[in-house]
Picture (cartoon, rainbow, N blue to C red):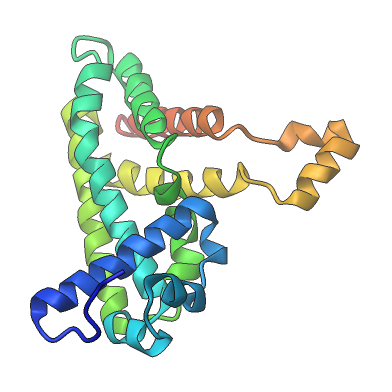
Length: 224
């Protein structure tokens, strides 16, 4: 919480923006994206709702900026992980499996990023102005390009298909995350009828398998 009542300088305005983002991030440690409300965010940050809206035009605008920050932090950590986890001398099929494994494992502890990715298209890109939408989408394109560049380093065989693989990976991450977090009603259904639990996913396992299949398929299509 900030100690000044009114942000008068650019520095104070940035402090307040940062406080709003940090508070939203802390809320996402406790609850899913769907439970984060502007009213509760305002209460926790110690500002009137109207004051929060001076800095971000909507709840979704706050969360889109958080998504961009979390995405960049993840991408920044990937180069060292990939260098350690992908054998540059191995056959392309082996490197593809290793690349997918490293990417999958790197996301297991990044709950906020995965939750936000799962909500970006269906929730977060709504209730924002065209300006905010465009700003976020430019950042997302740059983030996908960064992942594609890493894919080319370890899988040069991808050639021009690296951006396609990177973009598809991002979509798969969000999809697997949301399907691996069933509702309480679905968990109760699984418990009552164990035969239904065949559809229950473990996030880490399901994500690694999906990314490996996606990578192998993209590599195979480069020879067509």
